Image 1 (cartoon, helix red, strand yellow):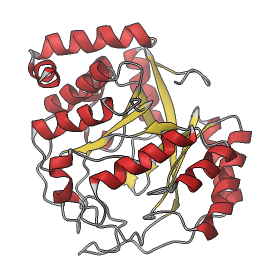
Image 2 (cartoon, helix red, strand yellow):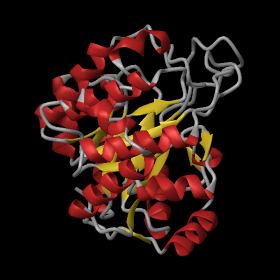
Image 3 (tube, helix red, strand yellow):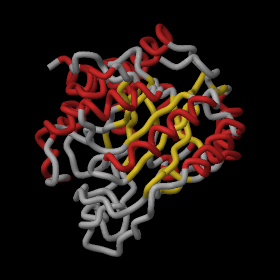
Amino acid sequence: MEARRVYAQPFMDLILQAQTVHRRHFPANEVQMSQLLSIKTGGCPEDCGYCSQSARMPGEKLSASKLMEVERVLAEARKAKDGGATRYCMGAAWRSPKERDMEMVVAMVEGVKALGLETCMTLGMLSPAQAIRLKDAGLDYYNHNIDTSERYYSEIITTRSFADRLETLDNVRQAGMKVCAGGILGMGETEDDRIDMLVTLANLPEAPESVPINMLIPIPGTKLENAAPIDPIDFVRTIALARVMMPTSHVRLSAGRTEMSDETQALCFLAGANSIFVGETLLTADNPGEDHDAGLFRRLGIKPEAPGAAG
């Protein structure tokens, strides 16, 4: 299969191909800055094996919080904008949003949009009607990761199917929103699983405009707490394949950057990654601080992407 051939070619050839594709579609030395806020943490009924927010987690669980007040969300969004973020992402630990919560969620979207930020949310599965309501509120992107390949999916999650994931992505697309969908590496999957995950994304009716690639952070108490770390070169190869297969998408280095050396991150940017999350936390996991990111950008000659430049 073509994707496997691209992935398995000599590393230098793969990086050259990915960087060449990247430069055709994006400025070579710009990276988009996004920020993520957990607007509702813990108590999720799903059993995702990587997540400490699952109420089914066998170990010590995060206590479930209430949905954050709208004004607090907007205050955090203002700080994110002042810190250089151009996209603001809001995540809730739900299987799917309840109707009673939609009014506040819509108010958050409208408020963040009014600040001049791109808006993104991840709230679990969406019905067609919910997707349309979020679109009408001004939501730009909806994130719903497929996590891994269809073959390996049931090893990680049993409370919803791979087809459920794809149905939500279709509802989002049909509503007219942009899709943010990627996966997690280092969960015990094979190379073929990583490749198949990207093949699935690239062969959706329209490829996602945003593709977050996460490196698993093994969290004590979760099913994957003892997962072996992914080899950094294999991680970079996956980033490069994502760039080659989805040339106009933003490929985002998401969770796991705290475990990456500066050199690994530099290779990821060379391989076509052009988006990161900034700020101190990603939902419940640590994220490199702003000073470190700014220092790395200076050393690499990278500058933040300008507002409105995102696809």
